[in-house]
Length: 162
Length: 162
DNA sequence: AGTTATTGCTTCGAATTCGAAGCGATGTGA
DNA sequence: TCACATCGCTTCGAATTCGAAGCAATAACT
Image (cartoon, rainbow over all chains, first blue to last red; front, side, top):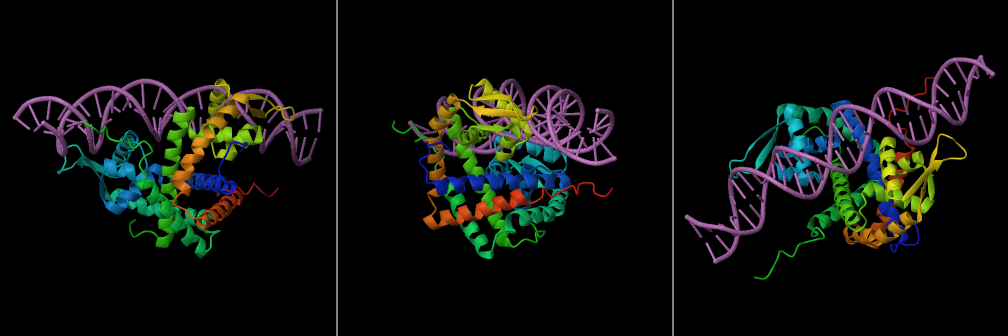
């Protein structure tokens, strides 16, 4: 880094280590998912979330995995074609599309998850103590909640007046 | 998660919180970089690394940001066309391409970095105590080093014998 | 009710991504 | 020195990504 940064060196180092480690982890996990289940990381995330909730709207799904809506439409059509999920209109709201995981989808998650977990354990948790694990979990949970709460930077003051 | 996981719930929660938080952070940072410098996150990472090292080979750059080589060729050509970097052959090794940051590139990094840091500070460091910061930095550094050391899963035993 | 926003999703086009294949340059073993 | 593997990078094609624009359903305001 050049002389421009006004961030404490420790913070900068922490930030870079965080981003780099996650990149590496994601990369490794991607290989495993492709090899064992022919799934991309996004697809796995979607299926995992659905395995938990059974049924979600497109928006809920997209928000959950931090993904664009148009991108989700594409992925959902792929998953549907593969018979892993089903799409249908919501009875409550004609606009909403409900995505439901199929038995095949559940089976695939079940088949892929152990290997996935194995990779995460080996790369992420292996070098950590029990205390590290708790610290990390606590910190990242707090950070995530903070980010979810934070207004998206341009919290468009909602055209007031009038 | 269905009944398939054999991972301690705390580990699973930690893993998900980590990935989700980083996704959110990356997303926010991407907006800022696009708005203030018309840069993608990858491009910023490349320039930041070059601002530090001044000159790197393609492979060093790609490894540094966890990126495919072909992807880097593409990005490097974009950056070169924008006048932010220069590419030339290495005197040591005719195969290697040396990428050098230009004054314009350095200037752009300098112009964008403060805002970048501001976003990181607001989203990542704001909810953390001084102790959290150290814990996180320590943990992620250790994890990153562990991952960098670890054989890439299929450490092709190098066709031995003979 | 009758506009007028807003919401939820999809379609579209452009940009970005990766892996496989290909190219010269470099190293290695005989 | 002569093959032969390896390395560093680029080219190629296919897949994935996003945002903007569009469409239909719902909500909000009067």
